[in-house]
Length: 274
Image 1: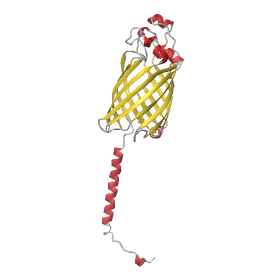
Image 2: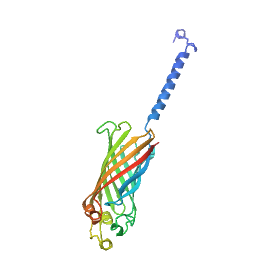
Image 3: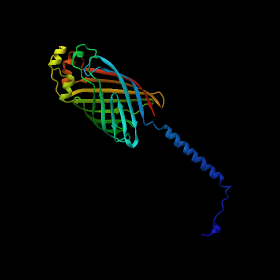
């Protein structure tokens, strides 16, 4: 190379270029920070109250805690909360697959129930129901930004249950969000006998006729959940659900003579994102 052909550039003459580069770098950094600030928070915790039947098939309502949430632990999975049920997804919140343990709390049916006849039945203790779940999510199914999740869970506790269904989360409309869900619950003989059969002892206690409930389809539930964002961090959530008992559960004297096959759930909660 001919050194004489090289052009000498004065440091002073380079100052405008350096200044422009520095301004551009600062602008890009600010834009990146702004983009990060606009990313939706990964976690949500909400707490409120919901009106539910005192027990499955009850004609009387009780107020229960209404908990909804998701906690993202990155590579260590995520936690989903819904009512008295918790699912730990070992696949993580970013995966379309969900898999892991599920735990539910079932309140007791005891002498605190409103119905005087059901109150005379032997108490059924509250129990922890535990098992596993698996689901898969389809993205952008009906509109860009929506999510359709189909799955099944199997759990035991005073008998066994298998619950399958789907959850459709629609694309957000401004500050509004909504979801539709449907579930079908199948239970075995032990579960149905615990909650819907009337043996000779319980018949003598209550005056209800004896009845043996067998396993099969127990219930179907259709629900709607809506949310309205008060700010980037705070949201209000409402829930409306409709459940119909089926098969031997619906025919049980506990339900047919003293309760209702159809029930509703109405709840509201305040949520915080972080």
